[in-house]
Image 1 (cartoon, rainbow, N blue to C red):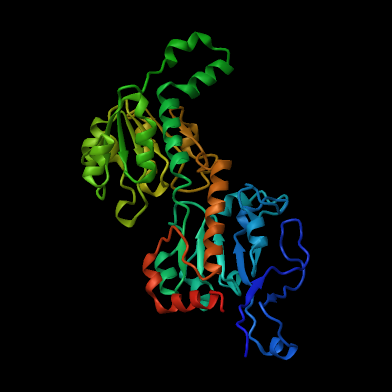
Image 2 (tube, rainbow, N blue to C red):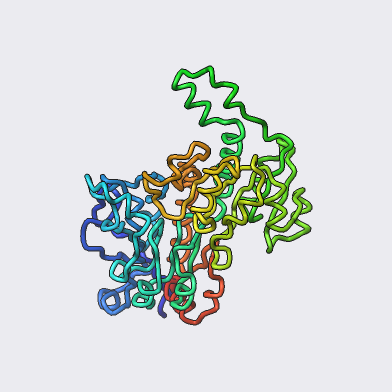
Length: 406
C-alpha cells in the first residue's frame, strides 16, 4: 500500500551575496512526507524554482537597494523562490547621464527569459517584451499606484496578471497636495529666500494668507482625492470636485459638490489634480482652462505631467494669470535644469518624488513581494489591475502548475 506523498519546493541552499542573491547554480531541494527510493526520486518531475526578477532601478551605484523598502528576506526565505536584480538597468559609479535616461528605461524580452515574476519600479513594459516570454511569465507587480508605463492589454493578452500597490500612496500623495497648498498660500519659498538674503525689509511684500474657508477644487475624486478631503477637514474649506465616474451619493457624504470642470476652475482658490492619465484627458489643462481660473488661484499637479499643456501653464504663470503652482510631475521627466519653469518665482517644483517617502517604499515593497509570493503558490494576488485575465485558460494553466501537489 503506497503512502500519500506531498511535494514542496524548498529554499535553495547555495551561498548568498550581500544582496541575498544566489551566487552559484541553483538546485531545488525537495521534501516528502514519506521515505522514497532513489529510483523514484530520479524519475519524479521536479519543479524548477519560481524566478523573480527585480528591475535594476531599485539599486544605487553601489548595487544596494537604494530605498530600503523591499523585504528581500521574504523572497529569500520563501520555499522554491529565487530572485535577482536586473543589474544592467542599475546606475554605474560615475555614470552622470544615467539620471537623465532612467525614466526612459524599457524592459526587454531578453531580461525576462526564464522569469516567472517581475517586480517593476520605473521601466516601460510593452508587448514586445511580454509576448516572447508569455509561456512562463505569470505576474508583474508594479511598485506604486500608477501603471501608465505598462501595456495592460498586452499583459492580459499574454496571460500575465498585473498588480499594483494603490493604497500605500493615497496619504503621501494627498499630503503632498496639502503641502503645496500651505506653502503657496503662506508664501513659504519667497519668505525663505528673503530670509537667506537678509532682506527683512521685504516682509510686507511677501505676506501670505490662510487656506481656512477657501475653496478647493479636486480633479479626480479617487483614492488620493478622497484622502485630501479628509486631510483638509480642519481647514473648513468649501469642496468642489470634477470626477465623471464619481458616485454622487458618496461625494455628498464626503461634503463634496460634484461640478463641471469649467465651474471648478472658475470658483476654486486651489485646483488639485488627482486624475488618472488616459487618452481622453491628455492635456486637459491648457490655455483655455487656465484662463478660467482666478488670478489669485493656485494650480497643483501631483498626478501626471501629460495631463497639462506645460507651455500654456508656463505662460499663465509668467503672465500672472494665476497666482502660482505646485508641481511634482512634468511633461518631460527628468525636468531639464534649464527649463523655463525653473526660472519662475511663483512655482514650487519637486522631482516626481515628494510622495515617495521611506514609509511608502516599505509599504509598496511589502505589497509587491506579497503579490509575487501569492502567485508562486498558485494563488491569486491582491490589487489586480487586469481582473479579466483571471478567467483566461492560459493564465489558469500557469497558476495551476504552481499549486502544490499532494
